Length: 213
Image (cartoon, rainbow, N blue to C red; front, side):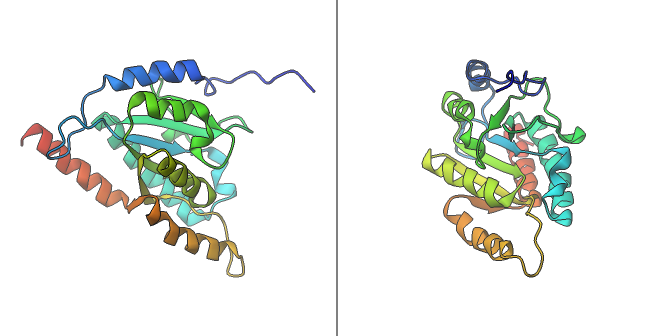
């Protein structure tokens, strides 16, 4: 057994630092829906948006995922949402440049397909009082489906942005096609499905409501 691999610059979030970040997030401004003045901001989970993601994902869905994820991430930063980035524990993170975490955005590593297989991220949800997750990234099956199920187990609402989530590569004879179709039928039991356009339109409306214009 060789010496342990040293953590790179993106492998920086530990349980203790996650708790510290969570404490800061708890003091962020309220995310106001009409009639709900003190609801905390949603948590945007950017799941495994890495440079080599295209190797396992259907090309068109991956390109759409990257484009829409960039739009959503920009809006999230402008609106003051909580934002976290999740990468696989079994390899060094290599984020897409346009979706790279900013210094104040926590980074977690998951050991299974679900983003919430990261104990530090689960602790972060509790400490930050997160009530809603907005989920984007790679890939519908198994990552996003398993994350939605895990969040439901924790009692956290999930909004999955269907056109900001990629799909694994499959051909006409691949059984994974039927798996993807089955997943699309299952997900509404654990998450609310939306689109990038609807999500951004909602946030624009909420901003006008908060500003009173």
